[in-house]
Image (tube, rainbow, N blue to C red):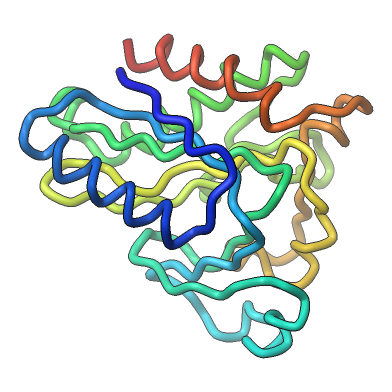
Length: 209
């Protein structure tokens, strides 16, 4: 597995890089994990519902937040500073060629990775992602993907230390009644994007070999 760290990047330039890497993987290149921290953006997935945007696009722009339609699964989510985004551009023919298994394995990689910080994440069916706490749980990692010719695009957004109030501007992932949290909130200590890169990369190596 190759790891590509884009540092801080806008959503659309990172998307172009994803597509370039995916074309190589489709031709037989090695699986590639892209790490990036995005500028503030709301991404709208294939299952997006208009009512889950609580403001207009110009109002989001006034707040410095871009709005971008994407072809990943899921509804609306927020990306921004303090959030580690992981794009595993993998050939799923090498990993079971099973979409349900792929989603569960992505969740497992996050669950394994955040144990480094003393946190035990868990699944909360039918809602894809990784959750922390109880009564009610809060989401710490959102997952949305697209698979083309059995190569996966898009991926995981792990909240390390973002401004979680940004999630109040939307209905995150279209899920009502459940909040969003971060590694920093749950550990009561600052956890940066840089802090999370190594344990999450190691977790991918562990889960996917």
